[in-house]
Image 1: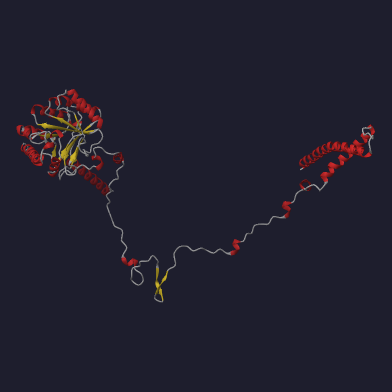
Image 2 (image 1 turned 120 degrees about the vertical axis):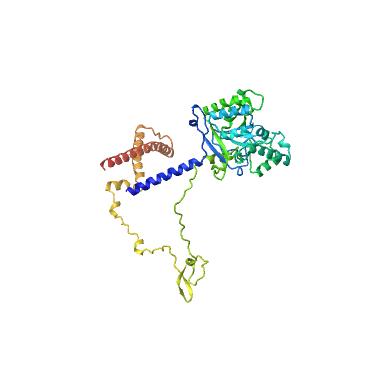
Length: 453
């Protein structure tokens, strides 16, 4: 019992120790809590480590790839420094807000103010190069001219540093005036070419309020990205505190970008995250749940079948799907009976129908019901109609003779014809009355029979 508790304590201690090492190795972001005296500071939410060789060109304004930022994340970049009069104020504003940024240095400015370059590094910011003289003709330069301008800017900036490794392999073309020879040379030197995702136009002759308006409007339009500013401009110094305050109020976060090193590998990302203008399918892929990478303690392989498992009785490999037994008959392998089920023959007696035969008494009917179902005798219906008609004819004849309706004033043939025609007419009326009476009688008999049943 005690041993198990000690083992559990050791595991917990080892876990805490490992987490501590990871925390020390990982880049530490400056949160708002690290800014004493500035409770409203926006801080730096996280540090993004990038590999310049894997993603040599970034910036949605000019390239199909940009930094893999999450929604409402902003990277601050400043060009053209150092200029102590304004750059020092920008550094103080960023320090008060615990914000880390990236500065692109002009070689001549580094030579004129090497102390300013070292201040960038001392404050924990990333610094890249921005050419030697900031010419706005990079889009017209030859490859050799671009090479001289880029190399000279890097050399001047490195000379101001105590450690050349403090210069990040980041480069931005002055005026963003790109050209293919420039891009190829930058990539050949292992530099990451930075464009931008949106501007604030702070190099123009506009007011600080206009700089603030453009920065917030363009950030909101895209939702995340790289903001390009200039730390040498007084209007930028005036607008920067308000920009940072508004970004925090709108729920934005500041991200610091640093280059990958052997001791600090690149932040794991997905290819879709680097797309400047991702398609709907890429956006959907980013929202799909990630499949975790499982680490198995034991990865034992299943035993593979040996070739001998497939040998035939005579030692040759079977190429046919037909199985054989080990036994042979007259030197020929005997086919083995297939393993599937056989049809079972049923006994013939089970197939004979043995249903019971119904008795004749089941179909017997009562006498009265049977009489109703019997058809009438031939001629009976005619007799029922003829007898009353004959009596009626005789009565009519007698009545006519008594009343003298028949006049015997003509020969006997005419009298006979007269009497015959009158008799036919009266016999027809009498016959109809007789049929109606007979039908009513039959209906009464059926009703009486049904009531008795």
